[in-house]
Length: 225
Image (cartoon, rainbow, N blue to C red; front, side, top):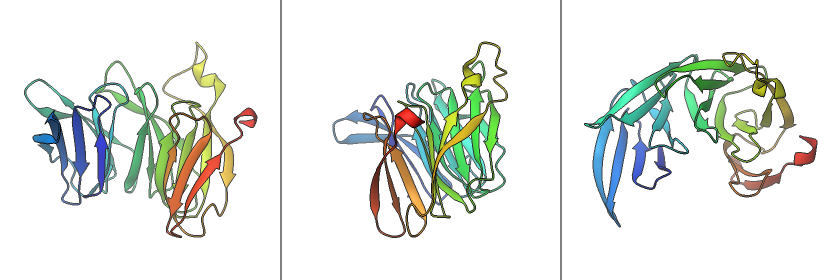
């Protein structure tokens, strides 16, 4: 298996694997789980599963260059949306605090921002951030405190992106959003940086780990970002 994640409600657990499947497990009692569904919509290895921050909606991504979203339609879990724009493996995905946007990162060295319109089944790519990482981007984390987006890649670098203020203006075209670099940490690790995560309580604090067998804790000066 490649990834495991709890739903925000704590009712569901999801896993994914190289066998191209996504499994959804329902917690029916303490230490007792039942398989609620097995999703087979991906055509290649599935790399990551992530739950919506508010609702019991699941997202996955993988080697087939796509992102899939799943929901319970009352009878069974179904794949309700497929997001396609990346040109290579989608390694990781992250919801913003509202669950209305998803950030994704890929071997194509881009970060993409997806916005939901009207409902969870209707998503559009509203921004593509490219020209920053020089090698595949392996992980992404969206701070639910500061709204900053953190990425890590095979170029040993970390990037932090900030949403432009114009995105929140009343006349903003939500189908086209802008993001800018707040900070770049070169040689953050001596080898590939594989995983990053914002602290959910303390603003500007995040952790990273890499192939150099190190875990590092960082503090972003939020006053200058």
